Image (cartoon, rainbow over all chains, first blue to last red; front, side, top):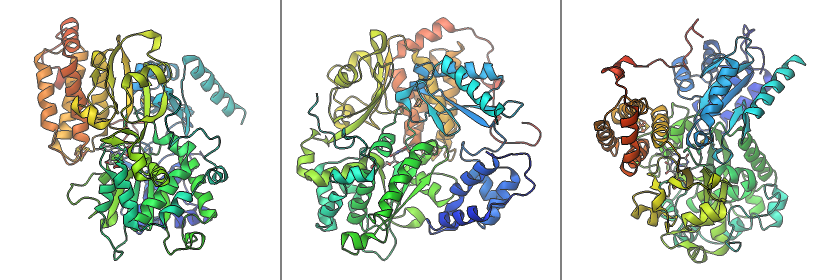
Length: 170
Length: 445
Ligand SMILES: Cc1cc2nc3c(=O)[nH]c(=O)nc-3n(C[C@H](O)[C@H](O)[C@H](O)COP(=O)(O)O)c2cc1C
Ligand code: SF4
Ligand code: FES
């Protein structure tokens, strides 16, 4: 994830624009490219700000209201800045039976943030999510794109420590 | 135990690699299929007795006959890999361990229905599995098994393009019409049926929606023949199923077993029994929207649609959730109600409001601020949601709440009696919470 602070110039580069042409070619209408393009934008700018959504609207010849409408329908598109490490904790039934709700509480207390909040330093954000399709590995969490199954309090401490160090060493 | 056929997840190391798949007879079933006419292929699937694995167990061969013949209009196949029903984690195994069989199944289905474009809709959370599936797809394209080059490789003039569409966190997009509006680039609102997808699907064109596991089964049917496939498992609901077992269980995971396998066999022989050797209080047989069974009812229960229907529940996604004797049933029901409320798209009043009411009342029960009458109120709400909505999410929300209350009324009554505190008579209004934590308002982060 690149910096979310310096967003004066919101533009995809040449290569990304080519990628978008490829995405459009998958579908009979340009509009269908919207979800993939929003994924690209979120990866590049960290979240979908008003400016980013306006830019996507221009790119795909859609009204801003449409882009906002789609973005706000899906929980995985961030409509506000999230942490560099976005921690998703499943508390649905299979995970809850294996104390997933306690895992959520633990991380929440440890980082001092609640559902859909980010830490002041922008390093972590936390989300209580619905079943991630990993019930066989309950309790589970995901950090950004990676799943961590059969998680324990100890493993969480290790992971958070590891992420903190990774940032320091950069 | 060991001689049950493994048609979807055979024990072949690295089967996900195209070369390994090829040395194990990969893409031969498609070659076989194109020696038949499209109608013969559909007929073979009909004879096999294959029923959809996405939840509704609809006969697959029959569904395929709904597609119009001829190709004046484009036709589409949408493969449903949204896999968001709590307790379900089986399609993911196919993406990871046998992606080429899914691709081959798409080719056969496409050929049978005269379709030239297919989309695989995969839930956004499955980043890793989307990459694995994309890799398999790229490899298949490079070998010319998919796309325009197929004509050369297979020597006829049929071709099919396959694309992956990545979701972004919405359970409702697994519902077939919602899946289509999502692919079209709109908010994923379900559409009213009729018209059914075979008449009015993607971009208004004839479309078939099938689950990942359903399609991945098709090459196996072509391989052994419909008649032989029909001999596997329960007569009314044939074949092998991917049972996902989770909850209070020693060896959670996905087990490929014939339909009609005893539930107790799955739990105790395959999945290693209940954690800490406890007794079972409840089992959800097929994903969280299916009515539960009591622990004292599961003896002799066969895991196929026809057998479960007689018990007032369904096979659903075959996601089995096991709960031990110490489980707080009120908490489980509340969690399930919360899920469906959270995922309701909000188009229909009974679902949007009803799911909210059910969650609020259950929360009151859990907080000790309810009476027994609230249980009847919950059942009445569930009855009024069921069947009165655009899509089946309404039913999916109503069934478990009603099911848990009917089967575990004592548990609810006990909680109501023991936790009753009467905090304030007007607590529902006092606790109204309409703020959305997801919408960004300037300066409120
Ligand atoms: C709320 C809701 C969610 C659904 N989610 C899924 C899903 O994640 N995957 C799936 O294959 N089917 C899902 N379905 C069922 C689909 O609507 C459809 O019946 C199925 O994909 C058809 O495939 P099949 O005939 O092969 O089972 C869902 C249905 C509803 C009402
Ligand atoms: S039943 Fe619920 S999810 Fe389905 S269309 Fe109506 S409001 Fe939306
Ligand atoms: S319930 Fe947590 S991953 Fe399914």
